[in-house]
Amino acid sequence: FTLNEINDQGTIIEKTFFAVDNLSFEALNPGTILLFTGCGTSYYLAHSAAKYYQKITGRPAAAVPASELILCPDEVLAKDAVYRIAVISRSGTTSEAVEAVNKVRDRKNVSVMAVTCNEDSPLCISCDEAIVLSHVNEKSVVMTQSFSAMLYALQLYAAHNANDPAAWNELKALPGKMKEALNLSEKVKNFSESIEWENVIYLGSGIYNGIAKEATLKLKEMTQTVCESYCSLEFRHGPISIAGNKTAVILIGSSSTLKYDLPLLEDCRKLGAEVYYLGPVLSSEDREKVTESFVLPNGAADHHLVLAMPYVQKIAYYRACLLGLNPDLPKNLTQVVHI
Ligand code: F1P
Image (cartoon, rainbow, N blue to C red; front, side, top):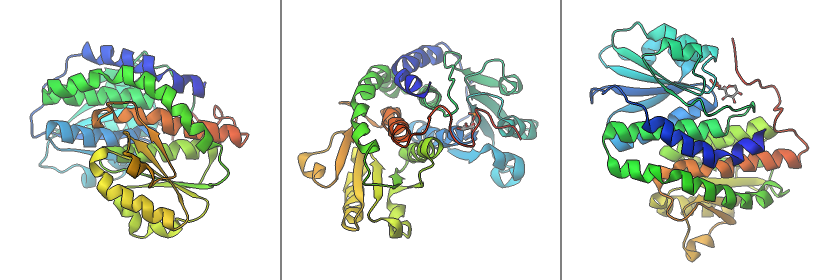
């Protein structure tokens, strides 16, 4: 299922636009903190969703694993603040996500919104509002198109709350660009099948940090490769000691931070690592600074961060095939975690 679900993301993103466009949302007080939460992939999605929401609306947002709301709610939720908690879960049945809602929804400073692909789930039933993407019906254990669709839906939600037609229009262009990205991302196959690397580091800052985290998780889930992710410049402060032969460093970047990020890649290269760039097109001078660049479709902007997903998902998928692993049957994992 996995490759089909990756390759179907153009259609899924298109349907997601219409699904969200048809919804109406409760207006939020500008002081309300949007707290995004989930488990695993859905938690990494929460990272990028929170950064994007804050950037577009100018309102406070953060991300926290659902388990932290269960284990230490008073360290997460301040008594004097007002929260809208967006609980993200493909299945809507992950027990930590459901229990987190039950634990905090009776607080008078908290309201809860479900973001899920399962309309009939306990999560939907226990929340005040929901974004339901019933057209996403993923069979695979690993989440691919559901990540892209739920992140995109939350970006549309952010543009709606910001009352920002320019952002909305940029987002509206995503489905077409996604179809292009699915073709361009085939270029990662050579990289995936290389025997030059054994360990991978994904770097991404701001809205791209959640993408870098999820890229790492995909590779771990499908191939059990040793891999880590960092906010890009954090890598110099200690973790760089693992850069060397057999390490691939992949920056998921934005044009606006290249003047900081490319010197870091050059430093990693001097230490023996192979360095890769995934983002909007580079100048010919900058292209020389990396081993290879995986270029997003023309006109890709920060609004279109979801376009990086087919590339990182295919890196994991093709690597699994090279190693003789079945991406549909990842080791030690089930589609839903119940505790
Ligand atoms: C979240 C999740 C996945 C992970 C694994 C188990 O599920 O933790 O991220 O890949 O397969 O489930 P959900 O709450 O989004 O349904």
